[in-house]
Each structure stands twice: as structure tokens, then as C-alpha cells.
Image (cartoon, rainbow, N blue to C red; front, side):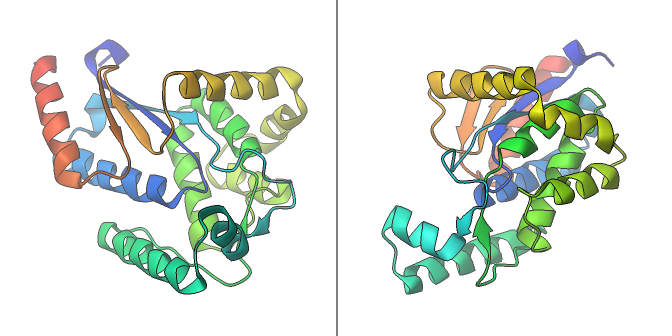
Length: 218
């Protein structure tokens, strides 16, 4: 089956976005239940929730309370909701007091690299679990190297790209492209370049879209 015979799914997201993790998990459940794994092609695209985040990051609680003018109680309520929704779809969130909001730019360079080896989704999920479930700082190069190796990629080759001006510019240009397309909330999931859904939709909603698109393949 060629790419032209598959349902194309473009996902604009960030590694450090909890709703992106939930949204993809729900989408993957929909794909599994409809037995469409061999009939979809998923491509990930960069978006930074916190593009101005310094390399050393900031305490996540402080950052989110400042950014959204939240009380500590309200933040905890939101975290509890996200954690429970994650459990419902099989994704574990492990929030902790020292957790940082980190700069995710380098992860997007590596995800672009992983695409060449059909390991983009595998690396994306690995990085999500590392950040949200394993208390790892995915802005640290040592951590990124570990996760590249974990999915069977050439870490030496990939890590060199983090200082490559051409690769840096490519990610900056793609982020601008999606902003210019009107993407302001993530995840944004685009099916066959014609149906777009923002946010973490329900599994049932993804299934309805996929069932309709599958009919067009037949």
C-alpha cells in the first residue's frame, strides 16, 4: 500500500503539551479499534507552547500560575483533571513540585530527523512519556540522546543536527507556516488535508472521521 492509498494525518503539537498526549492517545485508540494501522500515515509537525522559554526552563507551577493567572488550587484541579483523563486513555501523568516547563525546540529537530526512518511517532511518544511520566528534562541533550537510542536511532548523527543552522531554520520556518495557517491551539489534527480538529477530541469523534475517510479509500 502506497502513501496515496492511505489516510494522511498531520498532527501539529508540542512534546510538553498534555492535551497533545491525550489527543494522540485517543486517536491511536480509534485507529486500533478500527484496525486501520496499515491504512494511515501520521506526520508530526512542530509547535512550541512556550517558544520564549529559556534553555534552563522554569518551575512549571510558577510558570503556569503566572501565565494563566491561576491560583495554586485551580492549577491542582486542572492537573487532577488532566491526570484522570490520561488514565482513561492509558497515558500516565506524574506531576511533581519540581517539574519544569522546558524549551522543546531541540526535540522538534530530532522528530524531523526521525521522520526519515519512519520512527517519528515512536520518538514522539517516547519523549512524551519521558517528560510527563518519568520526570525527565527533555531539554537536556543527555536525555535526548538516551531517548534516541531507546527507539533505535543513530544518536551521534541526530545530535549533530541540534547545532545545524539549516535544521534550526527549517523548524522555525515550519512553525511559522502553521501559525500562518491559523493554528493557534494544539493539538491540531488534520485528516487528508481537508478536515481539521483542534484540541483532544473524543475517541468516538476520531472514529467517525476515520470511518468516513476509509470509505473513500475503497
